[in-house]
Image 1 (spheres, rainbow, N blue to C red):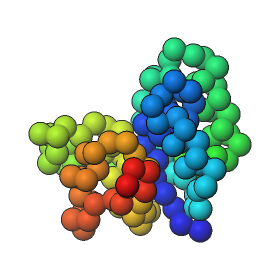
Image 2: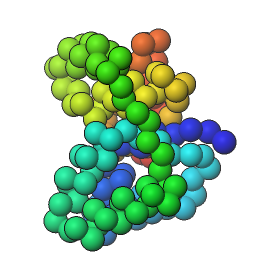
Image 3: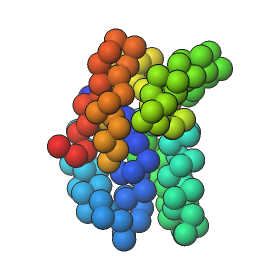
Length: 137
């Protein structure tokens, strides 16, 4: 089964029925043929954006707890790479959550991402490849 990274946008939409991407996000999850991965900074960002509803925040955490999503640890040894990426893409700019997704892709050989951000068409990994966005085509 393939591994797919997921960014905050589709996660927010999944738990916010008023989000313009909600229907697409629900459909994406229902039809998913793979395992979803993300990082804690992405969960933090999504939870912050879902701050209008503790119920939505809890639903996200409960979904993770049930295995809907797996977390990739970002360690101290990755900080140099996070700095390097943030400096390289400072004109975009690349936030911490996005940088951790690139590091997660590099360290785990993941080539696909679910995101609503167009920035991932600019970001390149250490091998100068971009992640294929399978959420918005």
